[in-house]
Length: 488
Image 1: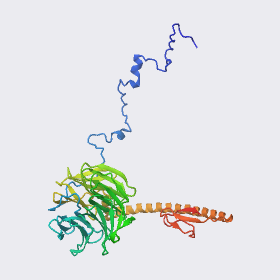
Image 2: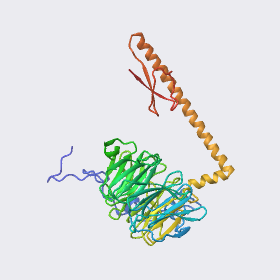
Image 3: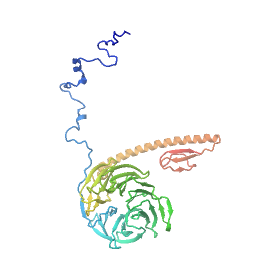
């Protein structure tokens, strides 16, 4: 190594060589001007006739007026029909509107229940609350399939009416306060009251009160049974959402043999009254709920685990919720400040449309039996009908068009045939694997028998989780085409 010059200063590196610190040597002015990264000159012009093959890829949506927003189907912004509803009570905790499978809409206007036939346009008066001057109707609920209407009143009664005969069948008394919420589950009618209790009534027997559900501390204002009838959701003015089992174990048995049950889940995320409840018709255990003025949130729950899977702040009181039976959409109705109906896309919770025609809070909504029209009842004493689920892009409308169009129907049949062939092939493979497993199990049993070990195969279905008897012949399960093997 060469010695350093006198004075301790290091020798200068040769021209063009890197310095000891690894830095590049300084460039001349001419060299700096020619560097690409200097960006001091324009890019060279392309030669004549040159066409960039990727131009369309980067300029397709670059022009003015081209929106990058996802396009949703057109939703009519105006109601298709408006009916007067004089003396509609402006009470958030009541449930005064329901639409049955026979296309008859029931609406309660203070102390009177009216029936409007949407097919014929006729109106009938069903009944009046007649227990005193301060009595009025507080809740309505149609039985799922039939002409029976349950009516709750401020005088603590639950009445069952035959709407074909316009006759009252029975009156049930068990609550200590007004009955603001009703829900049917087959022949069992559940009622929620201001006394904070939920009662189950079996309308087939004389002693109708069969169970009491104790979980709320204030008025129960929302009740909904799941589509499969196994779970009940309830909301109250105590900001609680309770989830109950249909066949839940009784905590204790009180006077008269009435069972008292505790909820499966008590969910406390809402900070306002929980009246708006709706079960998803196409996804098991998915429950949508809405909070009152102090909360304003729309929440989605897994009713099996009690977990909140999604939520959005709607910025206004949520009064009711209606799911579309065919699309991944739902409608919510709201109070102050815009008194609107909002159409949401699920699970993105994107606002597809906001319908503003009511001048007071929209307290109640109901869905038509064809699943296309939503009726809203508001404190402005009007009923408005909206075709929110009747868009041309909906799966329900596409299915209807396929039924009317032979070509599309044939195309659908071809798709189904291809799907059936793929399913048959998958099942054939499962059966082959199951047969191989069965043969291996038989070999294990035979080997164990030669050494005197008591080994017995037990077959378990993978899908149904049902044990098959040990003496059943080996082979694939009829449910899923496969088996587990347990030895013991």
